[in-house]
Length: 260
Image (tube, one colour):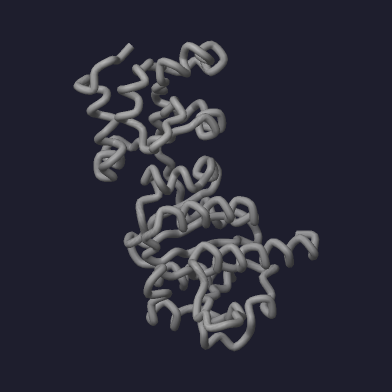
């Protein structure tokens, strides 16, 4: 059992918790909490760290044959990314998807995220994308690191199942999508039609912009169609994750009614 915060493994976990560069160099990420552990694909778990109190209570029950290290509760609190640690932490292998992975179905349904900075927004969009039946998420390099522990927590396990890919330039993808007959939509105040007046039963992709600045003018101009989300009161825009969720579930509704 590890009882010292000076232990090399503890230092290593602290580094992985804080540094995206280190996570990427080692091709790993961290997940924390019972739900994330129980849903984690076994073949991607590299090592599990369990707090002493949880190990005494449920150690045998949680043994899935992986390499496990027990930490004193005090030490576990040091490597935890939350204020109230759940007592279990996993080092996982990163995922490596390609655009081809997201275009396998006859009518691909994608999200393109431009420079989103809030981990909660990106995590919520990923979680909602899984629920709405999206096929993948493409992120600009300016987006928050999806392996940021806060983002991982917000996905609630969807990070294990929803394909995603960081790209250097989202606008360079649009011609490729058009070739595949995937229509791109951007929520915009100048949109001609409201979002639920469009037909999303064919391939479609939604462009979602930065929380503060919205979608860039350049990317907005490149979209095939501008759509509006109607709003009452004095609001001009919605939270990025909320707007994305509204659009995604309209796709889900239309395809469900069409039996697709």
